[in-house]
Image (tube, rainbow, N blue to C red; front, side):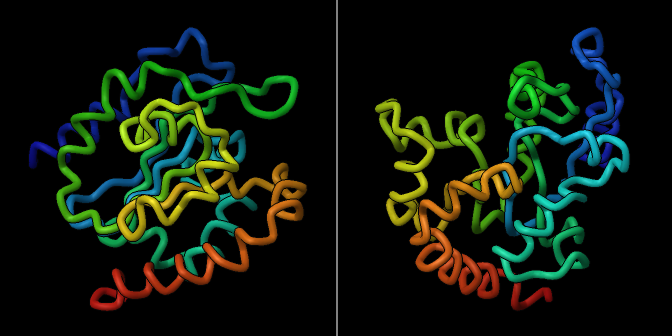
Length: 199
């Protein structure tokens, strides 16, 4: 067994925050050292927890449409790594799911990311992932999610900040038509360029 395979088994068996998870631990992520695209999301939703498949929900359908790729390509771990900020479903809050638990990032994120040496593009989805991955670029200025996404060219073509593709954000998409008019076409071209030798 390789060191990465052993590490993945340890993460999948993680129970660090079991006492805080309403449905118990079930780490959901996808990782292979050959991956060229990293999807850095927030935390699995309830449906994803039930199936154990990342982005296996309407949010995932929209994300794959944004990227312009099939389910087969999305779930090919040699193409796409999926590493949320929290690996387990955190439970529901008053206006959606609770924030991702911090234990995952503290215990596992750094060492898992160290194996992803072939990443050409990182999609940073939602404010929790953006706070973690973009804090150095933003200089800690406290930009809103909308401001961060609107400024996507700043980190192009290697890092792209995105809003969460959840249907809960449909109002945001209507208020910000530039997102699908400007960012999404560029993203699809970039993804196609990166995956062309594989797809």
